[in-house]
Image 1 (cartoon, rainbow, N blue to C red):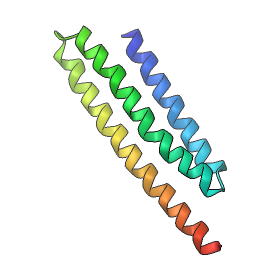
Image 2: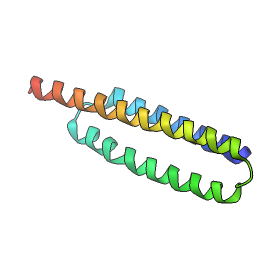
Image 3: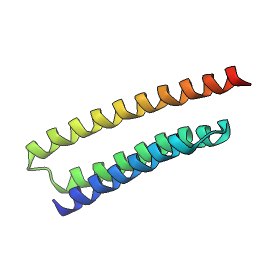
Image 4: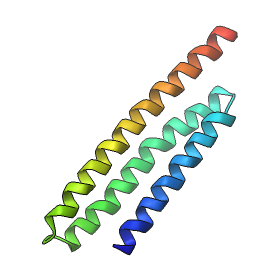
Length: 95
């Protein structure tokens, strides 16, 4: 349970960092770097979750909760990509 809490804290911290980067980033290069980082983070988090699932096979309720978290993450990533694309388009118009 402690490990799960730590993972959730890490996820929240990463999200906060991403949002901060969104606010400060002005150049297209930094935006693209963030876009590249996001899927990498997703993959890393999924790998860590899979390892935990192997350890705890008996408790089915926790697995359901994990699925909900994954759905939230995917939604967040989709929204993030849309937001980045919108900002990139705005910058192109300005140029």
